Image 1: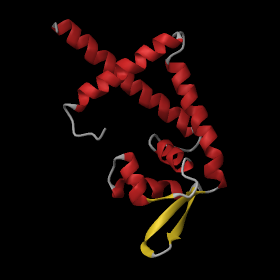
Image 2 (image 1 turned 180 degrees about the horizontal axis):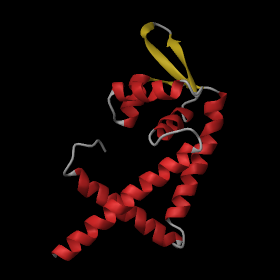
Image 3 (image 1 turned 90 degrees about the vertical axis):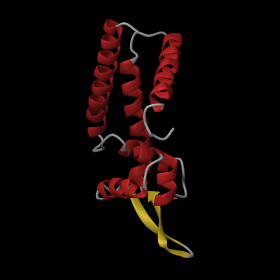
Length: 149
C-alpha cells in the first residue's frame, strides 16, 4: 500500500470511529446512559429471568469487575434490581425493573437513529456491503489485538 493510501485509510478510520463514539454518547445521554451501558441493559432485556454478573461478563467478553463497575453506575438510575440466587449465597441475579424493560425500546430507537444517520443516502445493498467491509476490517484488526471476538 502506498503511503498516501495508508494515511488516507488511517485518517478515515480514526475520524469515523471518533465521530461515531461521540454521536453515540450524545444520543445515549438523552437516556442518561453512557456507551456500553446500553449493550449491557439490552442484553439483560433479552433474558427475562435476569443474569448473574458472571453470566453477563461471559456474554460481553469482559472481566467481572468491569461488569460490577458498570452495574454500580447504573444501579442508582433504577434500571435493575439485584436478587439472591437460591442455593448460592455469593451469587446475585440482575433483573431489569419496569423502567429497565421500558428502556429497551428507547435503546433500540437510539441505535436506529445512529445507524440510519450514519448510512443516510445509502441503498440497502450499499449498507450490506458497508457492514461486510467493517466486519472484514474488524477481523483484520483482531490479528493485532487481544480483544475477544
